[in-house]
Structure formats: structure tokens, C-alpha cells
Length: 431
Image (cartoon, rainbow, N blue to C red; front, side, top):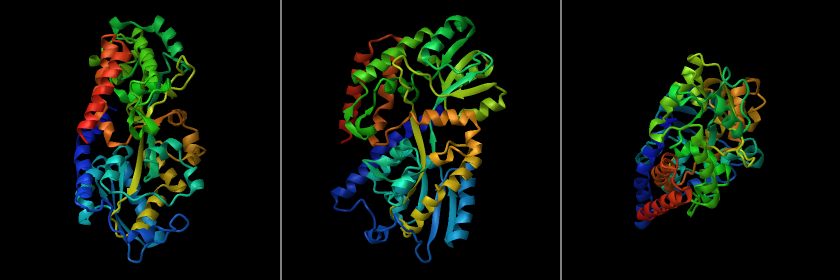
């Protein structure tokens, strides 16, 4: 997770550039949206999509099994619709930045993959077309959190391909049964913990907001209001977030290590060695643990003392249609085709990434995999990471606040007030 987190941090640094690009076009009287002639073609696409005559598509996707999947789908799409599709390897994390120049130049991909937290920058720069091809029954086949993640200011843009969040890994030799509550883990720690020998009941990346957010949100806390879209509504220092932070702080009794000495590599190492009984991490860790021979299982995050499910942050993988495409109908048809039930099943089989479609839950390959189902259950209790550009100002102050709360036992309300003030100042400075 550390690499993914640092990537998100890096993306935050380029958000200013994208915002300035969008604002500059507006100030000079240029429209941030491309060719108006597409508007007529977009009408009625919800009920029927037909590719334009002579349409050819360029698609960007990251290297790896997802690229293999996209190439396979491109072949079947061409066979079915007669539209040639060229797939190029472009990292999803780079797609929006690359499209900033390639889109207006007419050389960008017609359809591109990108993580959902880049969507705000893409919309502000006028780079994506709305997803107006899914009617309500079709939307109902996707997880609500997945659709929320690929929407911006209430408008649906993306076509979700996968969802990622974190859950609880536990060593079945040390914990034969998954703990249903954090209280159970605390009781287990009283007889298991041995800090001198690096034995801990539970470890997670405490100083990282991405993972520790589950405690704040489990008590009703949030970062930004309106589902993460209203930067004017700062919730990091709300009474609910403070309550969650106080409970998080109490868990240092079972993990007496400062945040400087906790990172994903250390946590994974301790778990592989069999000294840590349970850790919090995402599905991307399963292959590593399996290859290491760890006898593990996955469960949703344990219930909090208030009886609520911790609300983990989630990331949504999706494809989007470039607003500068010459073939919007064909591009939308392809994006919908990629995320169909049949291709969603194929994508899971090829990538093992958690599907965003609810109607795939009954597929034997998914339903019979207890670990995958545990992640999907936690995903139902997840909140998409805010995708607005202002989220880039949150990570560093929030991380410093968590460190002060954990390392120095500082009062959470005071520390979170300070972090919120820093974030508000940073947001104002970018306007």
C-alpha cells in the first residue's frame, strides 16, 4: 500500500497545474469542454449505442494483467462491432496528466484507465465525457461506493472496473477464528503481546490516513462533506472524527510502537514471520502472503465499541471516455462493453482484482473464495477516497496529526483542529 499511497501523494502535487490549466482556459474565454458537435451524438445513447462509421479507438491501460485483459476485450469488441481498437500501455496514474496535452492535440486515447481519485483534476481540465449510457437498472448492478467514486459533483463519469479497500488478515495458527470486534483483539493481546520479542496482536500503518480513516469514519467522521465533494465542509476535526481518533489512540496499549517505526514492509515482515497475529492491508498483499506460505485468512474489519463497522477508504479503478475523442459513441460503447457482466467476470479471472459489479458476487470463482468475499463485504462498508483536487492538501497535515495523537498522546481535538486549519489555509492559497 505504501507505493500506492506515495503515488496518490505525487498526484496531489500536479493538481495545481491542472487547476490552473482549467482556470486559464476559462479566463481567456476558451471553453474547457471540447467540440460541441458531440452533444447531438450523445443524445439518446442511454437506450442505444451505435459506433460511428469508420470509427477506430485508442485505449490506454497500465501494464500487467489488466493490460492483457484490455487487449483480449479489444479483440472481441472488434469482432462484434467491427471497430478496430489499439491498446497502448500507459500507467493509469499518468493518464490524466498525459491527456492534459495529448487530448487537445487530438492524439490522446479515446478511452483511458485511471484511478478514481484523479477524476476531479480530469473534470476540472475538461478531459472526460459524462457516462450517460447507464440507466438505473444498469447502475444498480454496480456497488454504490464504486459509482460514487467515479462521480464528481453528482455527475457520473466513469465506468468502474474494480474496487480496492483493506480488511483484516489474520494468522489462522495464532487466531483460529476471526475476531468479530476490536474488544476481542484487545483481550487476545493481553495474553499474546510480547513487545520485547516483537509479538503483537495487531498492526496497521497508524500514521497513514488511508488506513486509520476507518476508525474516524466508523464513528461518523469524514474528511470533506457531501460524500467527499464539498471542500468547504471540513470534517476532519468534527466531533465524530475526534471520537474515532480517541478510540484509535486507545489502541496504543496493544501496539506500543511509534509511527516512525511502523510501515508496510515492517508490518508485512512481522506477519510473514508469524510474530504478528493480525494486520490491516489490501487484496494486493494476498499473492505475496500465499507465496510466502503464510496460513492466513481475511475477514472484514472488526466491529468498533459503538457497534458500527469501520468505514475503510476505497479506491475505484475505472475507464473514462476522453472528451476530445472523434468517436464518442464508439468510445462509450467500448467503455460499457469493458464493464459488462461477462467481461467483468473475465477481468476478475485475469487480474484477481475485486469486481465492482454486484451481479458477479454469485459467480463460483468469487463466491467460493472466502478471502475475496471478505474484502467485498468490507467494500460494502467503505467510503471512496475523495476525488476533488483539494484532497491533495489533506495527507501531510492528517499524517502529522495522527503521529502527534499516537506518539505523544496529544489531545485529538486540539491536534485535529490544527490539521484542519492547515488544510483550509492550503486550499485558500491555491484559489
